Image (cartoon, rainbow, N blue to C red):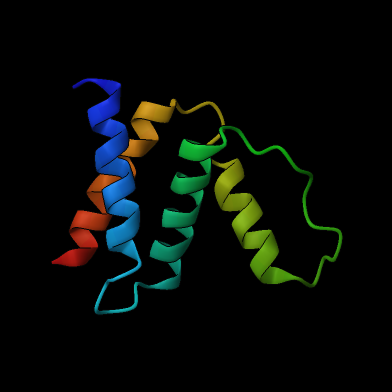
Length: 88
């Protein structure tokens, strides 16, 4: 699959994720977040949150950090697959 096609499918999935009729679980939302960040930015490029009691920021940081080293193509495919699963 050419990268441009994969990138287009990824962008379409990102738009579809905003239109889900049922709110995904927190775990699914974290997974979507981390896959999206890894696909668009790459490995986590910030330090952990300064406030140890900001549990949401910590969870998001940890989720994104867990994607470290995964290729852009791989996480795009995972993201598309997850969005398709959440649509059903």
